[in-house]
Length: 246
Image (cartoon, rainbow, N blue to C red; front, top):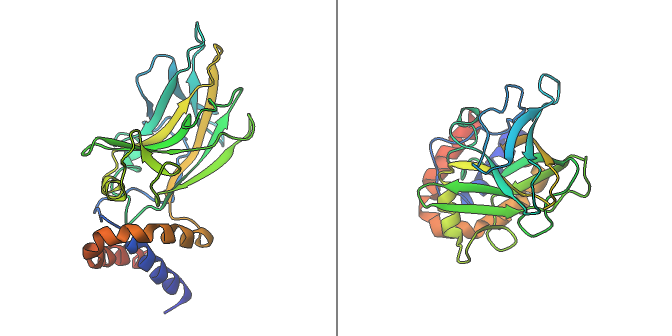
């Protein structure tokens, strides 16, 4: 067994400990959204004054531009920018457990940072069967006009990790909902001024983190395995086959 096989074998053993569901149709991994073919079907909720478009179109570095129109009064607005089955050939929907450990992307604030209130910048995903929306609150960038990298793991549940709008979220519900993600995206709440506000999203991808961080994620996932330990043999077989073909 060579070094790569040993690494994959260890990785698989850890991944399946946290795998509650093994969906046959998984999202595309390690393929960042580059926006070279327009907005790729990414959309924004039907909220007046919130829009998406492609900035730097036709250049080497296009990105998704999110705009809040100027308002007549200082009433903060918010929007969810998301990818569903109609975006990017459905690359970002499907079963996450057994495939995805993290979401990675860059975010940019042009003139004004989002609101400083907790949850004003967050990663969201939605499961249509349960009707639950999960969010992971993100800290604001340190400054405007600077791209900031974010990497969010799908490994923990709690007030400071993945949670639902109302208290009472459980690890079992979280694992179940990750079995079939219908859309994923970014939530932004504007600063609240009357002037227009502009933000950017780029290089969004679903990925397995670098080896240096993966063991931390797997350690957090171990407690979740207890709930679904009866299904681990089947999950191991499917995921092991997937990796060894790579």
